[in-house]
Length: 294
Image (tube, rainbow, N blue to C red; front, top):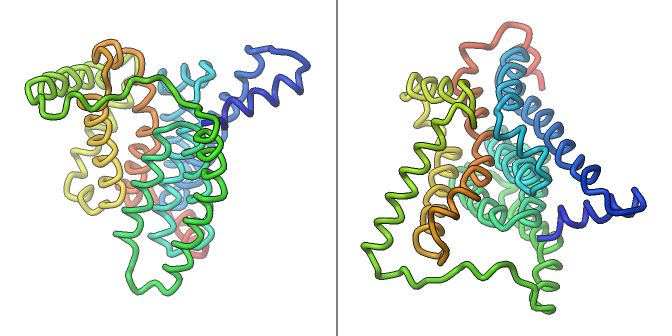
């Protein structure tokens, strides 16, 4: 997908030459914009101070900061796809057309940023359909808007890539289907690597452990957040299938080079989920009155 390469190309044109270190500044912009939007989204369900605290947690994750300086497309994916899911979530909760449209546009741009964005686009919209109130009269209009957004934003690139035979690395294969011992061994490697990576303080800092404990503390309430839980669980299952069945490269090498970057998109979902679960504990009079009036 061409979104980030096109942005960098325009940056080179503006700079008058190929200055890669300056073009990477685009990733920092996405980093800042993601923090601003996440703060805005959390502020709609919790107090301003609590939203600011959770936004600070995101900005302090070492892996997130490093990715912002790498120039890869992972931070733009977090901005578009990660936050797009949250906009769809709020659009269903508040039955807001504007939030829905913003969410659709962000998810479509996410699909134009990285291949994982296409999976998140489909997952997010399918579960939005499942958890949207059936009585909503404008449901059909929203479905039409979503389809038109996908066609207008993503179809031109897909047609262009197909016509000119553009393709990425040939790392996909279905040879593992039916080879159950191989698939099971890969899943064990994935699980072991994931546990080791996710509990590495150098990657995630101590706040990640605080979030984990917080989720256990609110275990009775977390099951009510079906949309976010379904999106996260489905995306995890897809990643396991891709890693264990569809990729023909060495699984250890692939995990080392890609795992941390792929799980970055989970961070806004987890932080927002914390905001929703603890909104009643950290909401105060003025902020609540202001939100009830918006």
